[in-house]
Image (tube, one colour):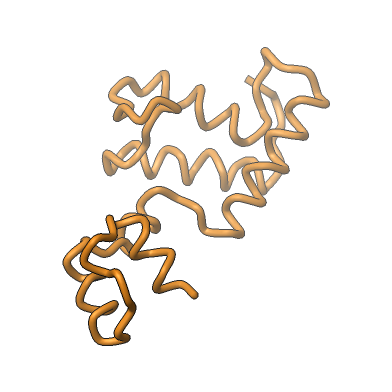
Length: 114
């Protein structure tokens, strides 16, 4: 573990540990993280504070994480805004989009975004 962490690194590690504590932290494969040591490793990696990676790689990791946090691209945010196919179909019906009955969920989303 790095001896000194910047404020940004501490905040990132804190956010990751918060997600772990509340059961929201997932691996890159989408499985829920259950091991606290794995959660710490993920936090240090995202914060760019890993002792197993070069300074350049750590800088890139922190930069990528901060950009993602600014965008608000957490998985939880995405699932809260997701609609069911039935809800999308109703919106398409109100907007009188032709061919809506044969569209799948993804196609309805695309048609409604235009």
